[in-house]
Image 1: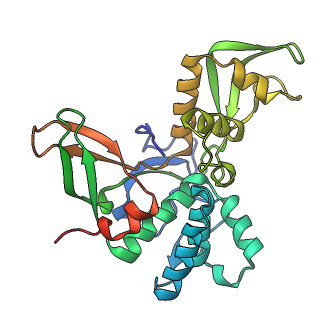
Image 2: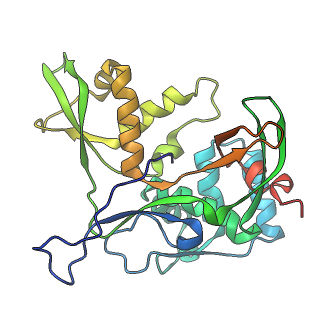
Image 3: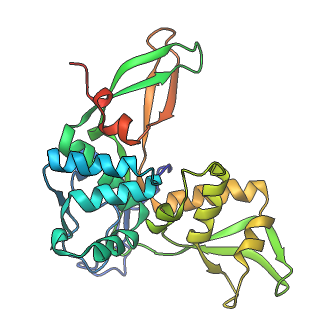
Length: 291
């Protein structure tokens, strides 16, 4: 997920007990985290995961998943159900298919995405070959090698807040209930939001994904405990709040920042591009470094 650097305080407050577990939100890297979840699951002593070895059996089963033309969320879930060996100290392989699906769907979106990205690191190594088009001179940059160990990951450890407030720049008046919405409560998005997103449909686009994310992330309205027509609220949001709200949700959800800083080898122009984490670009032959 795209995020910005989170501000944090490394000093304990005067009233804090020496052994009290304080909230820590920090920027890390995949090379530092390795097989540890970036969003700490409260109550779990073990925050790690391990994978099986990806052999020919797994290659055939992943190929079937790809041929099924399922959406990206369901594809990633299917790959992880196939490859996960242990999750948070528990034997993932001993769970039924339904239990495995439920376990992933209820996890923070950032945790599931991170496990999928680390699967590439675990099975094929940290170096990945990428291809980009320079936005300045249209030169095709081939064989750009990135190191996944350098991938920035924003983490939440300790007693982090599950919900935060976002104050609208332009409050929304709802006709249903005659409610003025000024501040909304934002929570952590679960992986379920990606499972439900029909990324294969012709009508799917960035705006549709924003709408689905808003529906999942907005947990309520400050000062109002009753029913809110989320459809009406989202439809009445103004552009400034659509963008700031999207950024606030992204910051709060944290997780891996899947992008690379690229310098054109022809004109020298520097730019940032999101990595294509689809199967072919991440796990296919062209993703392997040339040397």
